Every structure is written in C-alpha cells, then in structure tokens.
Length: 270
Image (tube, rainbow, N blue to C red; front, side, top):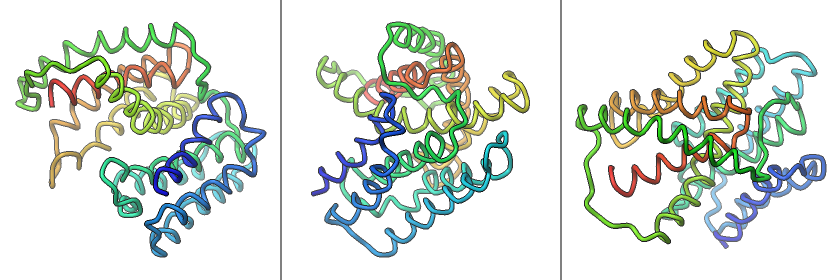
C-alpha cells in the first residue's frame, strides 16, 4: 500500500501542473488525509503532527486575505520549511527511498494553499512542456558546472566516481530527482520565496537572499554537524536555479537545472 500512497500524493502535485487547481479543491485535502493512513506505516503522532502543520499553514494563508505577501506568508513558509528541512516527519514513511513522501504531502498542501486558498500568482507551476524550459534549464546547468567542479574539488567536497552510468539509470535517477527533490524545492525557494521577496525588495536582493537561505537549508545534509561546504555550493547553485526560474518565471525550467545538477552529482561526483 505504500506505493498506492505514493501515487495518491504524486497525483495532485502533477495535476496542479496542468492547470487543474480549481477542479482539485476537494480532491487535494482528501488525498492528503487518506494517503498516510493507508500507507501501512500509520502512526498517530506522525498523522496528528502533519495534520497540525497543514492546518496551521492553511489557516495563516486564509487569514491573509487578498493582501500582498506579509508576515502570515513568511510564517506559513517557515512552518513548512522547518518541518521538511529538520526531518520532523521522515519517520512517517520508514521505507528506503520513500522516506521523503512526507515532503510530497507538504508540497500538495503548499500548492493547495497558494493556488486555491490564497492564489498569489507568478509562481510558474506549469508542467505543460516547452522546449525553452529545457534549453534554459540546461543552459544554467552548463554555467554552474565549471564553478561547482572547481570549487567542489578545491574544498574536498566532490570526489570523482569512475563509473559508466547507463542511459536508463541516468534517466531514471533524473526523473526521480525532478519529482521528489527538484520540483518541491523549486516550488518553495523560487516559486514562493523568491517570488514574494522580489515583490517587496526587488529581484537582485530577492535572488541573493533566497539563494543564501537555500544554501543554509543544506546545513545538515550528509553530516551530523554544520556542513559549510555543502552550504556554499548549494547557495551558489541557488543563484543559477533562480536565474533559470527568473527567465520566464517557470518552475519547470529551474527544476531541469536542479535535477540535472543533482543527478550528475550523485552518479559521478558525490
């Protein structure tokens, strides 16, 4: 049943990308409520915790009304971001490779909040493919790659893996990464955070602040302590992900950059 739960959580995330927000007003809350109890790993503490985070998030957005992004939006983003980044609910789905399903649950909640409850516009959450998304995404990957390789090896963070990945393994890893890692993070840091920051502080300041915060969000990755090397490389990567999103304000473009960086990294450089 864990794979059924996975499909239920992926469905709203994908359908929102094809302009079906209005038709999913009831389907998303139902999917979020049903997915975890039927997963086969139900725990009351996890269920109540995820439900509480979701309800507080949506209540903050509902109370914000039609106003420009303000403190309620920042509080709502902080609640979702901290819940995911600190891994409060990773134990909800204790299955190898699927522990990130709680992240997908919060992606559904975030999309419902900002596309249905409080639509702010300009997010760029559109999966209807355009060749330009691929072009922009790969262009920014090409710009970031020499910087990442030079700095990563200089800091002793990257290590070359002399393996030959098959096209199928690369494609599978890329598809998994774009759905489970890239799209959720690009929605949060570019579609929502950069989007709202730019309205108040301008694009340049918003790009810098969101990229620094993106880097800091990786402080606890691959280490028990503060991983400053990862923070630096992720912050720089955030600049190029932001550039891809800002090109036409489309999450699919920045997700292509993000997923390609992570896939190449995981196969040949991690």
